[in-house]
Every structure is written in C-alpha cells, then in structure tokens.
Length: 73
Image (tube, rainbow, N blue to C red):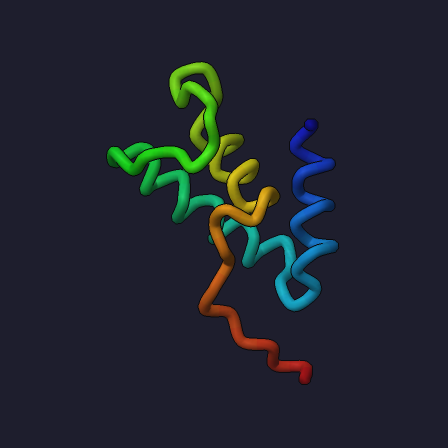
C-alpha cells in the first residue's frame, strides 16, 4: 500500500488526529524501531524504511496514537 493510502486509512480511522499529530506519532515509532524495538509486523525491518514500517504499524492498528487532546470537542 502506498504512503498516501496508509495515511488516509489512519486519518479516516482516527478522526481526532490530524496530519501533524500523525507525523509526530510516526516519528516517535520510527525512533523506537531505529533504537532496537521489534516490529509488530511480520516484515524484515531491513527491507523497509523505518518511517514506512512505523506508518504501516499505525495503519494496521498495531501501534496506537495516544496523548492528543481533542480541543474542539
């Protein structure tokens, strides 16, 4: 799946977060992966960029996006 499709999937399934918050979540998970965290997907981490792997994990619901407050509600 393309990056744009994964991003759209995440934003559709999580209407309280925006692109900026998603980027922060991807960056945090990417940092974890680069520092030795095990991927939650059955994919060789050396065959995929860490940012793409992080986005895939979030899109599949394996990593949740927490800590954001909905100020509009």
